[in-house]
Image 1: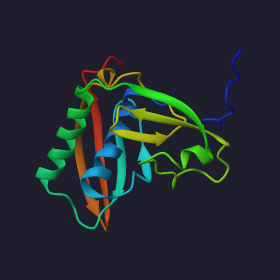
Image 2 (image 1 turned 90 degrees about the horizontal axis):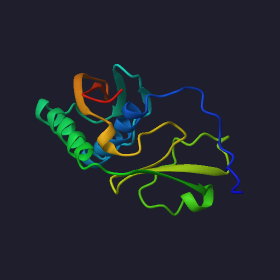
Image 3 (image 1 turned 45 degrees about the vertical axis):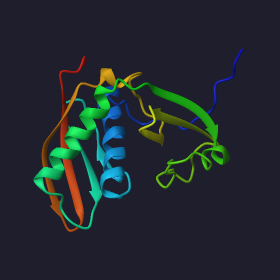
Length: 159
C-alpha cells in the first residue's frame, strides 16, 4: 500500500476552475511582464482578483493581450498534473518559484504543472484539464503606486 505524503493543511476550499485559471494568469503575467507571481490574491467562484508589482500600468491593449493569452492556454486542453517532491528536488525544477513557500512548509511539496506552461508548488484544488476552466474574462483593473490589480471571472464553466 502506497503511503500518502504529509503536506501542510490547507485553510480554505477553492473553486478548482478559478484556482487553475489563477495559475495560468500568474504564468502569463510572469512571461509577459517579467514580474513575480501574484503576492496578493483573492480567488472565489464568482469573481477573483490578483495583484502584481509592475513599474508601469499596462495599456488597454496589453490587458486584452493578457486575457487573450490566458484563454489561448485554456483552449489547448492541457493536462493539469500533480507530483510530490522533496524541497531539495524542487530546487532543481526549472521555472519553479519557491519564494512564496512558507517557512513552515512540509518537507514534501506538491507541484502542480499545467502542460508545459506553468509549474507551481501548491496545495490548492485544481481541475484535471484546462478544458474544465471555461472562458477567462478580465472585468476590471487598476494601477496604483506600482501595483496592478486585475479582477476576473469565468464564463461558460461547468461549475
